[in-house]
Amino acid sequence: MCVCVYVKGGEECRFLCKKTGLTTMLSIHSDSNASFLRAARAGNLDKVVEYLKGGIDINTCNQNGLNALHLAAKEGHVGLVQELLGRGSSVDSATKKGNTALHIASLAGQAEVVKVLVKEGANINAQSQNGFTPLYMAAQENHIDVVKYLLENGANQSTATEDGFTPLAVALQQGHNQAVAILLENDTKGKVRLPALHIAARKDDTKSAALLLQNDHNADVQSKVKSGFTPLHIAAHYGNVNVATLLLNRGAAVDFTARNGITPLHVASKRGNTNMVKLLLDRGGQIDAKTRDGLTPLHCAARSGHDQVVELLLERGAPLLARTKNGLSPLHMAAQGDHVECVKHLLQHKAPVDDVTLDYLTALHVAAHCGHYRVTKLLLDKRANPNARALVNLAQSTFTEYRLRQNPH
Image (cartoon, rainbow, N blue to C red; front, top):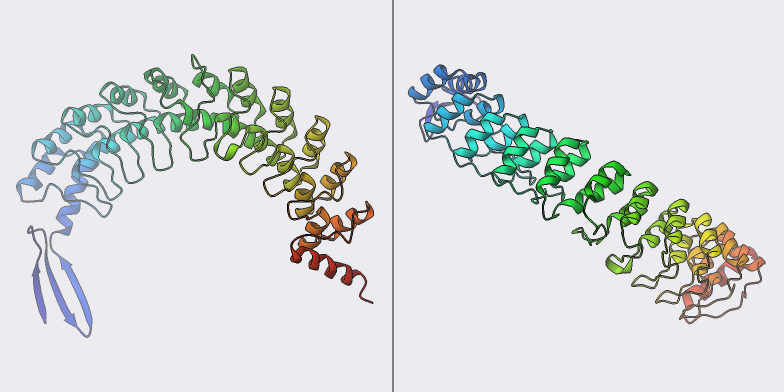
């Protein structure tokens, strides 16, 4: 049995033939649609007009949602773009990914097509599904003429993608120095410099960072990222001493606190970059700065097991007895992480071996509770009190179990 199904718009007449459980679909006009789109891609104006006069829908698109206007724009067929717009093709029609003809022309560097589309009212700040704008796409590919034209006609370079990248940021990441210079020149209010400066700090790109900082003495302004990290925090995280030095020379605050009270020195200490820690200390970084939870840089280094940074901080006078809100000292932190060398450094600098938390936990309690044999043995060798009593039973019982394991009889 065969049934003819009429599809709205007259584009297709499908015959569904059911035979032995198998359904077959025949599309009469699919070849015509494909030929129409091929003609548009090739810029064959006469052929496109012929198809349109024959009843082809001007908005016919391929499986990716690209229609004749999109294809003509991509290939730079100015006359065909004008013809399609004149015949009613929507200037802001989008593909499945949300790209308009202006996105596509900008990405392809088709400057003349871009001009036509903008003059015909295309949304110059339209965003695709991922937040890309035409300006972002042009900057990404270093299409200078397109970048200039879009900026001159109102493109907003502060608009960021879902990942937080601006046109300036992507141009910087791609190393497109000319595009970077143009975008910076247009950025009279300095609204988009910081995200790009974060990227330069991450890449240790002093050349780009210097360009971004020209006539800008506010390098440590809190950024829009959720952590509140400044470029100096980012440089500290990645151990990029060159950019960090540049930022400090340009007035970045060495102790600028991000969310939760984290300073660049906290970040560098946690990451274990000795040269970065030394730089920040030499530039006046507060060695006893505390986070919201009471962590000092020494806590951070000890907890992460960076013994060289621990030694450097101790030599510079880091407070051995500093405590977190829970009363944990750097020695407790090192014991918790089973960081033997850090424990040795702390004890050599006269950290009290039986120092206690608010619950009267010693480092020995912590090491035993965590099952860290090496640190437990080291603390016992340094005459830690094996009979110290805490206010929490778990740590006490865990240490008892440890002693039983060592002396089962």
